[in-house]
Length: 206
Image (cartoon, rainbow, N blue to C red; front, side):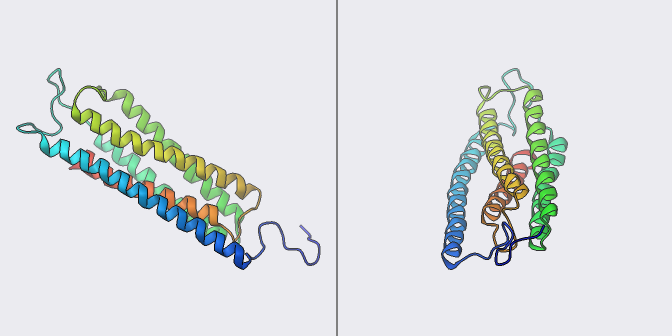
């Protein structure tokens, strides 16, 4: 599309010094927010280990009230974990396409990432429906639902953020010189993915 002389296409302008300061401040704010979330998840993991290793003379997971063992779908959740990890790579790929001037590539990357994240949540909800225990059954089930549910809420927030980025990508708001909201959103998404990998190994595998 032709543009008027002296005017850059929408989303293709170079940021001014004041804008760069604002961009850096926005990214720093996201880093600080993620730092606070790290502390929050660390406290949840600490509580989980306290419950797990504070249970005397019981196998882990302990038995339910009806005497049956808690059973976690390790294989299904492992596949779901791979889906979430893959979503980080598709988001990274989309950012790389944007850096190369390919806005359509960014849109494709965001779409695939969002669909993968939504799939992860749907599989987790299906898991809840078939687990056979509730948060009230035992300390183990309460800790399990708290950790996985809290993480699931973060995935949902991440999907909302990425959806907003997708909307802006359709408007050509991003370019190689301006992608601060997208970068901040990707920081958050990668953080959520890393937390899940830790959670999967600590809760489902070990």
